[in-house]
Structures are given as C-alpha cells and as structure tokens.
Image (cartoon, rainbow over all chains, first blue to last red; front, side, top):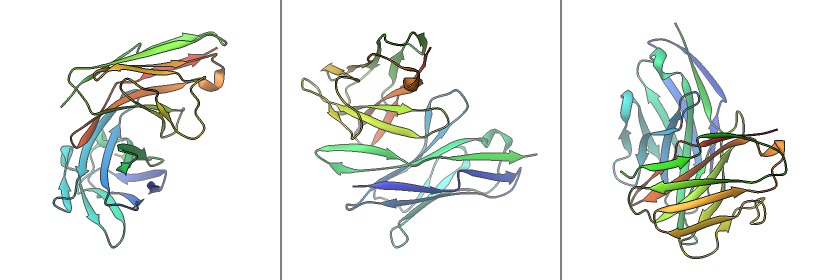
Length: 115
Length: 112
C-alpha cells in the first residue's frame, strides 16, 4: 500500500523567504506524485505532478518539486514566498492498485507567510 | 483537462435524513472517486465509483452509509445516509484522467 507523510503541520516563513514543504512517500511500485493547494473555503488546485519523466518538476505560481527516489521524497519549494501563497498544501501519491490509480493524500501543511 | 460540476455546494441537513451529492464531468474520465475532508483535516478516500457496478469502499466506509452510483462514464452520485453531526464535512468527487486527477469544488455539509 502507498502512503504519504508530510512533515510539519504548519510552516511559517517571512515574505520573500524560501518556502520548503516536505513530503516523503511509501510505495511498492513506481509512484505518481502530486502537490495540491487549497485556499480557504475553496477546492483543490493542482500545483504540479511527477509522472516518471524529469525528476525536477516545475509547477504553477513559481513552485517546483524534486523527486528523489533514494530518499523517497518529493519536497515542494519556492524561492521567494508571497503573501498570496498562504494556504494548505497537500502532497499525494498514486500507484496502480486493483486496476485503479487511487490517489492518497498526506495530512497537509498549512503555510503561513509573515509580512 | 476535464471539469467537474458538483452540487450542491453546501447544505444544512437535519440528523437522520439523507443527502445526495452529484458530480458531472464534462468529458470521459477513466475512474471516479469520492473523498471526505473533515474540518481541519486532509482528504480521506471513501470509495472508487465503478461504472455500471458496485463501488469499491475503503476500510471504515460501508455501502449502507455511503451508497454510490455511477450509471455512465461522466456522472456519479454519493448519498450520505441517516446523517449525524459527525458527518459534517466537505465531500469531494474526483475524476482520473490519463495522468492526473481533477476535483469538484466540494459540498460543504453541516448536520444539525
């Protein structure tokens, strides 16, 4: 079975500082990995996805993530935080199981951006 | 990518009643899923909605409580039955495409 662990339920950074949100996965087969963002009272928006192509994945809003198989990690980064980045971020993994690609979510990390 | 229309967007229901949530996709998706997001929590998979057959439920979820239908490749419903305040959550449907997933905007359910 696959699973995702997000380290840190809350991360606080200053505006302009580096954003690093951590995600480690467990999967018995090569995974697909995703990062989603959820703004207050809104639905999920896909930031980026890894699907076994390039290990460094660039997404929307200046975010990127690097797939590291040796570390089973898929951390999300952004060089310079904006106030508008404050939201809940979810890492998710899918792997073929029982002929369906179920998407399993981590517990989420709330990003706070200080002025 | 596919767009999912989910309704209702929110509802307040009396305990003991049932609510049916609908999701319509604007193009065919291979799989559809239903999730629950309890207040301040992550998304938990309820079940995989199988086209033309019974849904596949995750541990802790049963058909009597969450009956699901998927009569064709673009439409699915989730019913929350015999509701209690513990069922107050956001319910989301999701469609799987070639590589990736799209989500409905969610149904915010409050049970009083």
